[in-house]
Image (tube, rainbow, N blue to C red; front, side, top):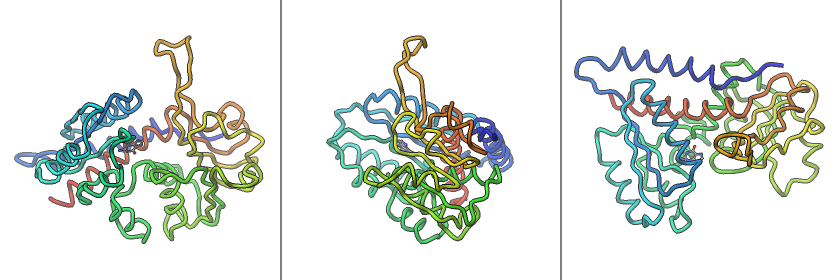
Length: 291
Ligand code: GUN
């Protein structure tokens, strides 16, 4: 069984980006600059944003964290976004999701300058992706595609079952896998909460991407011998034996599924670090396009 090690692969790709920054950003050329907007105090979001900022520092980017309370109004957030759009020193930025319920996520995504949309959430970038045109891709699907490419996992002609249809992961990764590209050229089924005979469908899959947000949902009896499994889930489950009082598990029951597959990504240390690496790569692309 091949372990798709997102930490190891991320370290390699981040080193490549760091080398490009060192080469390109000498004398009076400033480094790429990512900003992250964090609204409220969701503990998981705080961790993700901290890790994104840390990854930027690691490769030699500049970074700015903009923290606002959960009571921030939509108008105030749109004002922050307007400032980021106008600021020539900022190459790309993200607004960490989820947002408090009183803020319309769609209105926020629409306000982001597509050239600085390193999350690839703006409909302009999403539309370009759907048309197969070069664009800033959403970070998690892009991280998954990088993982498949670098580990030489064949997708052409394979049946991929994507569990979950979110705008952030399920829908875009299904699109990317089906594109006439490498990796790509797969036959893709999107499964969701209303899908009939989900277990039977999963057993037909050569590749399963699990992105439904249910801890250890995918069991060994739902997976064909030799399949490839990509686990996108990051679920906190109570664990009083740890310092933090919780631990992270994926959407896949790793212990039993890993006995049956040819390759699998672990949680933590799989898709998570690849998502951040894809964000760093997008920031580099947004920066170098301007230079
Ligand atoms: N929340 C969960 N995943 C993501 C992501 O990729 N980007 C942002 N901005 N928020 C998220």
